[in-house]
Length: 86
Image 1 (cartoon, rainbow, N blue to C red):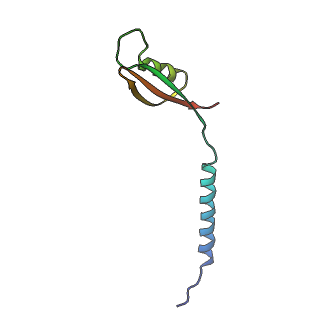
Image 2 (tube, rainbow, N blue to C red):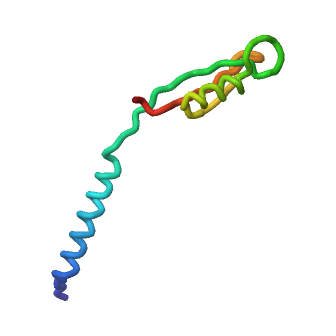
Image 3 (cartoon, rainbow, N blue to C red):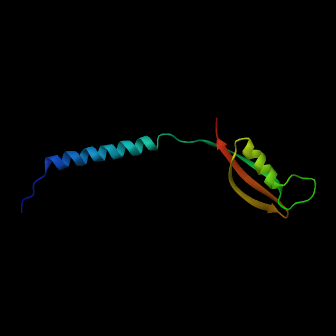
């Protein structure tokens, strides 16, 4: 059985393929570069030190974005903050 190639379908398929490749290439061109900051504080209330919540809120007011938090030693913890590098 002999099969024929439909020229119209071939051209449309090729144009669609080129459009997809170019759109993926354009979307991945811009990369965001981040800078990171660690803030520390007391997880449990009490004492004269700033609580971790206050440290996170202060960093957010300085345009840092919250990424993650964890407790490190007993009553203290840390949070990872990031922002776009200028």
